[in-house]
Image (cartoon, rainbow, N blue to C red; front, side):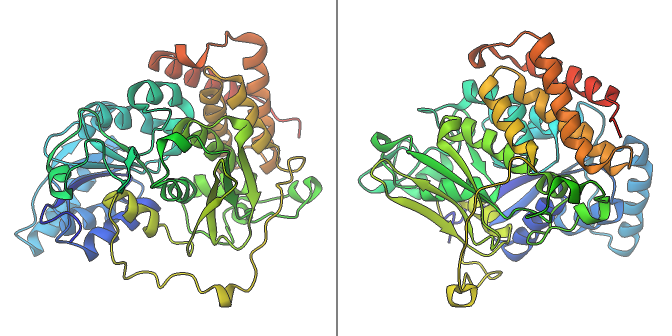
Length: 439
């Protein structure tokens, strides 16, 4: 048993997306360990959301598309006619709905798997309410990293609480697993779902505080669908081509970010805020086999890596059960004899400039990373709407960051407030929407 008879109660933001679906599949396979208290979805797949409500019977449901509330109720009514025992959850709507859902009582873990900046506020609210957060919404840390650090930082580390003793990693305060399961911390814990940050988090388990921070973090990237291409090759890239990732099955926004390497840039910023390492100590390596999910180089030169097949259920399950592990039915593990060889190479920053822009924004500090994230979100949306070309995504972000550098005050990272983050986000979005590509 993982929780010694205690069911973990979940609220899942982004339940109809890739991470949300994988999370609920884990719940379905381990019904004795998990219970769904709340679901949240934007509304692009009402049929699936209604099915999830009937199957998992949450007490609360948030719907982003307020105009579709009646349709969702009708779908739930139809299910009730064929399954009278189906419950009718409380429906939350509007701008206040997500933060309200994050603060409902009687749950343990918020799975923050919605895409983009809108994940910032509910994630913070959940942590402030003492809930643990399994974070897939990297944009929250990218945009509001200083705010999260001021709320949660323990010796520079946000993910988990790996204060250790001779017996290995355990939650602060020690004691038995049963005791730790029933005693809630004053503030929640942030636990990584991104495969790269989960890999680092797993690698540093048991590393004594005196050995922290490590010498280097090594973030791996598959290289995306356009690895080895030149900028001339990328001029005619279509939306359909950008959405074909060679290794991972993900949502549209993160898949496009992977194609531009902005996803890896956002993960560099996330790693900086989460693990307290300077940007100069965070290295990106292109690893096309996607078997080594990331590695940590310790001060004595030892390098600890986490390997696994590209399946998001592994990092999701680890975030839900940490510091324990499930006996997973979905993966037999990596057969290294079948893999043959594992290769690594440096990223091509001249072709994929978004990665360099992310490093620059991180080094600049203040609200620069919030501006970077906002500009990228708008640019990707415009590309998906076929308003701009693939290379225009990078041009949009570069333009907005140039405006920020010359026209806006830079705050020291320690001075950034949540209001500063929201103001920077609004400004950068407006600047990105106004940008007119040369082509």
